[in-house]
Length: 281
DNA sequence: AATGAAGCCAACCGCCCAAGG
DNA sequence: CCCTTGGGCGGTTGGCTTCAT
Image 1 (cartoon, rainbow, N blue to C red):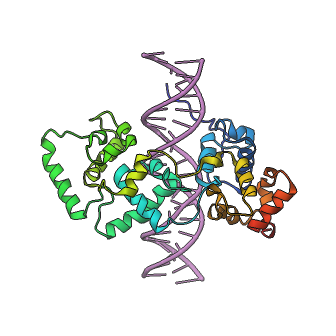
Image 2: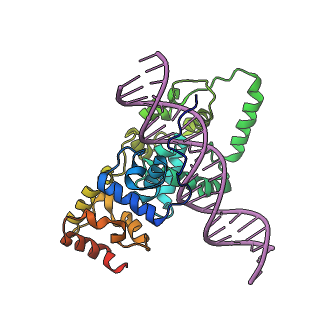
Image 3: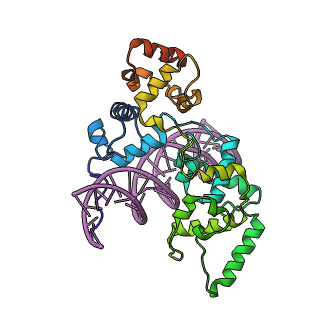
């Protein structure tokens, strides 16, 4: 008995999202918040799988997303976190405000990986390439021996500071691919500088998001914007975060239906003035 | 200008896990 | 417990864009 598909495949549209679909999804979520994703397409009038809607929202439409390339500081943080966490992109993304796991994963695969290789660093182990090769050879030669794979949770070094890592793995020898990748990072953990205050601070806080989660209640967020419009933007909706709106050059705010989010014309006008939305059309 | 290669990234797929009945 | 369901995650794909020839 196979698992039921996440949605009825018949009549479900795939491929790139159109502006019209985006608009519908944004309108729906701004009006109703995030609810059961399976129900979203039906309620929002979309011929999409719920999963697809969730992905589209979290990876592209979410208001707190930063757009554009990762800054140097972000890139460095990604590298550091990757050294600690391995390919757990969602965990890494949780510590980069406004970035998605998908975005970081893509950036890693297309930019950072190459950069590290160019620098002679193995992107998997974060070791100098020569050393990494030697270790690989060594492991190969040891294949005939009993290899005890030490899970991250038992590492007495850096992992000890992270409750997340402590919880991450309890079985020691199963061989799923994801666990393999986790184990690869073990090498890194042993060499990681646990005295790095920035990283330790980040990791000790476990999953405490750096991102203000208020975007989940978008209407409230818009209230914040309005209330702070004479001062500075709130942390969750700073100017940069809002560029995504401005990037949507094909639509004005009315096209997105955001105007429904404002309690009065005055509020809408304040918003338009601040972000020059009125001139966008 | 034409064409093929390489790069990039949004989106999909399939697996896993937690929650609830 | 067992089963079902929904949501999340990481890996992969496919198509568009840019670059090189």
